Length: 309
Image (cartoon, rainbow, N blue to C red; front, side, top):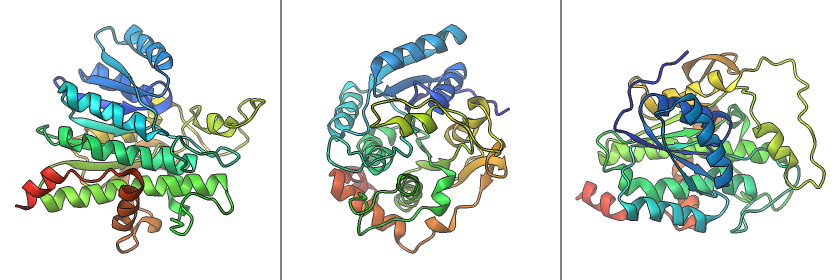
């Protein structure tokens, strides 16, 4: 089991920290001495999760803040609160996501829900927080993607799936987009000498409410969870490890991708190869330009200018 190194004096933002891998990561970061800002869509659920974590880790330093990644106004308000309050941030953990709602839904800004929540929201959040992150002595952004990114494809002619919506392929596209975001951020950091580490992780087949919550979005009658698979699976204690490794290990490398070691589904964390779907020439830069245009959020001009001066 991966042991999170001492994080005393460091502050993390973990999105989607009220359940699943986000909650487990928050618990173990807090146990290692970190101050964790729990960025959650529903504060009451975040507060309930905070209370559970404190029951297990009495000295946990946790702050619950509202963040709805499906609403760019919420993203901007969250980032502005962090910046304006002077809160130091050392690590941003982009964990939250939605998976395969059965019909096409949209965000508050009119984007297809998975592309908007899983990519555009975290993209805007990351860019808006970069000025504060880069004040840290060891800044890091760890982004949760998925094994489904292996068969993802960016449909630049219809990124919003307005033509023919396919839940699983839309999800795969959004998680490939997350991967490309992390890779481009790593490239930019190296090119501009920022010293920011951008890492990637995937949880394999981890049993969380992600699989069932997405499947019930838009349904009047909620369906109970059904697991009809012979694939090996694991609990969140193991499933959160690739993300924790990417977020905290001194051995994590720039632009590296971490996941379970057995069949890409379960087991201890190892570095895994980037899928072919992520290797297109200028693919990451092209997607970044699209994300910047859609969200009106981009690399911080002041820092970029200073680094290139």
